[in-house]
Image 1: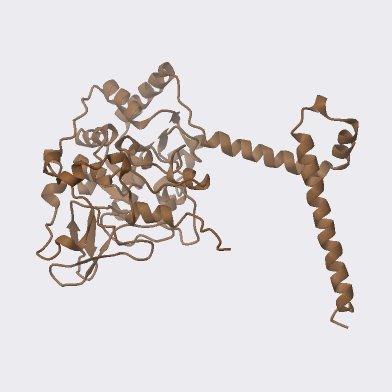
Image 2 (image 1 turned 90 degrees about the vertical axis):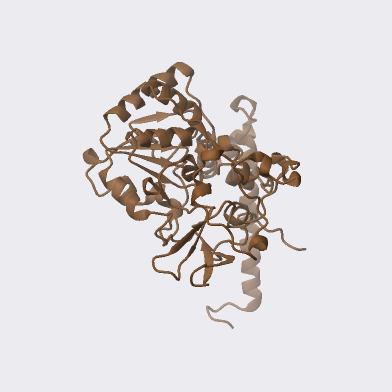
Length: 412
């Protein structure tokens, strides 16, 4: 006799009864689910009795259905009609004129016009992965250029209407738009920057190519070495689940200081719903991190929040105004309303070329990523012959970030 007084055969019989009961419950759940999918007028008397006898299951299934519909609505992209959008832009323009200290928070949505996929849009990285679809093919990131929104933000800073920019993006397009380094906090890093953490202060190397080819989660060495001390260089990317500790380009000190001074926050193209982890990594700061939302202040003293996004965000109820529109469309209307001309991006004047540190002799083969060129004609013939849409991203801040999310198939 085992502990509890049951013999082996009795335990087996009890297990069979338990499994049979669970299977009966599952079958009842399937039956009720099929009946609920029918219109009430189409249900038979017997099906009506089954529903009446299964009130708990009916409530559970109806609750599941409501949650699914709610999630589906939150993923839908909604556009304000043109007149409504213009009205909202006028209100936003007034808020910007009256702001004493405006901070702009940006997400992946401002770079979709540069053919860089976002994460939670209809064709976003996480959205496609959840549907079991491939995300291995994407535009060559070296072909991406600052968008109308990037150039508008840069000009608003020049006009002293924007004091600081806090970005979740790693694509380096804010830097390439001409926004000063001191005016931006790239909380997730910059794909063009590698650093030596052995040097004090850290020695920074700006490159004209994506330095993250060999890097991934918890593996940041790029394969190149510091010109001064010879130590291994590392990328600056903060992956999901990591804590960003570098001073630059993350620039956390400036981000927290700007947030503490802000009386107005404009969120552009961020879903504001990156999932949190136990370590409060910087991948969820725009949703949770209290210092960026001035959560220590009384509600009446917190900055006014304006959101530009096509989808629902968790901060919608907090916002003074939510504009449903594409970032470039909204920024074009906003700049017109403010009477400001949007500068055109000029690759010849891209500041990354003057900031960049050239590779040393022997380092030319340390990467295979396509380099930025001031003149597109400088690209190698084989590079020019490769269509943008067929380029494949194999690793680094974007590619491996996608790959690690994909579920592995079980080997049978």
